[in-house]
Length: 323
Ligand SMILES: [Fe+2]
Ligand SMILES: [Fe+2]
Image 1 (tube, helix red, strand yellow):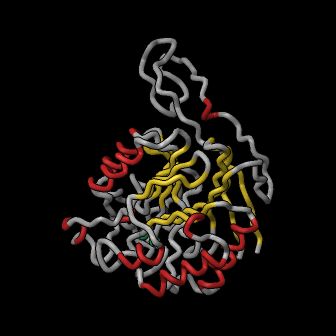
Image 2 (cartoon, helix red, strand yellow; image 1 turned 120 degrees about the vertical axis):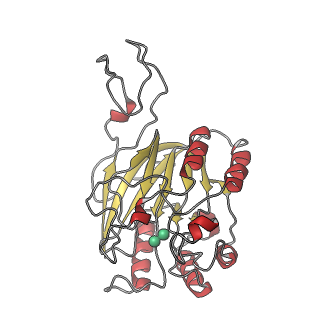
């Protein structure tokens, strides 16, 4: 197995300010005002990390790996069996000295208790017990309904989840499979669009108020906007190779969740669902967003590493694994 870590630039917050030259409102991520003034943007700062095959971990850093869409129980793609893939990928995490693993849904293919237990046992065999993992259910994990109590029982979780995952690092996690009738009938048995629901947003809002300052990650399975067209087949279903209108479409209540993210100062949003890994992070308004893609359903697994030191986001890597 070969592991390659490619440094990516950590997205910096864009200040909410007016143009000092003409007073016009600044448009986020546009480096130059229409009057010609060029902003001093921290977003353009060069990456501080060194390129290489391994990711050097800063002293005192809390390192997160972001995975998604394991689909335990699926037989796609052919080649290495799922258990071997999973073991190899987990041993990569151990080699990379990962402190916490975030998995943004679709851990299983059908959400069956056997599949769920299988994933849990694999995670625990490599040291990713309850305190070192942060998981949310995907539409496949709740394939039999709007809420899978087996998922919650096997992993001992309930949503929304607001917890301190590392020093100065909070994670807010939503179950984005809350069905309403309209989406239930849009497409068969799996909730492809996804919905968080106002109750969960309100409950999370209450709990976030008491949080200390630091970095805040928002984790959910479905995406909050149309995925960026970084490759022409980004919105194709990887099994049928047809354009998938449902995978293109965002979460039903994306606007409400984004408003929550803005209001609560979310540092970055982590999601999955679309199995093609998004090479570059993208943004929803001013918030950086990362799609993990699937670690097991693609021939060449990729995932991201995030390093935080005392709640400050220090480094970001794309990891390529050749199994
Ligand atoms: Fe998936
Ligand atoms: Fe999904």
